[in-house]
Image (tube, rainbow, N blue to C red; front, side):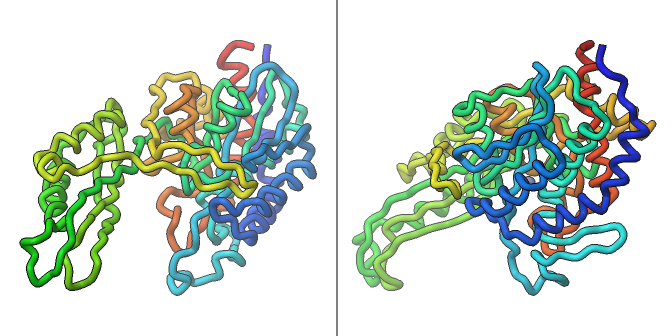
Length: 405
Ligand SMILES: [Zn+2]
């Protein structure tokens, strides 16, 4: 039998650590940590994990920080990516994105919602587990992962494929506005290349204009974007042209190459092969003999490690009655005495590799809100940090109850 979950004491503790979580989050915010430059924030997180009493803290060769609580046979993981995007145009901010700001209710700064707030709540959930002796037949692994904003899921490809770590499920602490999220659309980054032949612009008939050849392809892509897959829960597949490139010897010449990048979101049932094939089948793509391919990612981590992957991020979802959703619902109802809202992310998360590629169940519950992500004046809510710390402390025992241990 699992230990009984002392919901009231967990909540009381979580409230008691509001100031500590705020300070820790503001410390992380003050350390710029764009993708591939996360070392300083990783070391700050390790320090806090050790301070609150984690049993073990590792930094792996990619630079992910992995903190452990407990020694039981059931491995449960909770994940926050701790890289952030840049700040964009500073003129759009009303406060310094790294110095941040706070009042009684909110904390502002780059990374507050997306998603170092999740890390603050997880570390103090670890402290609550230690304070109340809630360790049981589980080991809780808390991960602070790198490069997510650059290549979502790559960190977990490494953790699963190279470190051979396979938790029974993973709680993603990306922002969910304190709701339970059980899926997201996948995505891929596609490129179309068209070749031409340059010549003097005064006699274009001598050449073969690659930009003109791309024109009808763009029209057909726009048409195609209205006829992609649909799923009741995850919504429609989408396609948009995100970049365009060309080469030409001069402004007075015929362009000899043109390429576009496509952001393709994949709904349930859509595959990467299918997404490439439907573009290859477009008449204008065939006529131009265009090459349709997937991008690759091979940017080195801050440690120097290179772990190449194709830019394909598979769709994933858990069913409504999945044990992960039931486990989080059990913890939520015990703590807050009301039913949680269950929904999905619009954006992408590390779930693409954890569940999408490797079939390890993922479920989301995080502080902050999705619309804050990548926006100026990004903020999160102190009350969310408290709610999430309580949830993360209660989830492992709720899982033990759910599986009858
Ligand atoms: Zn994020």
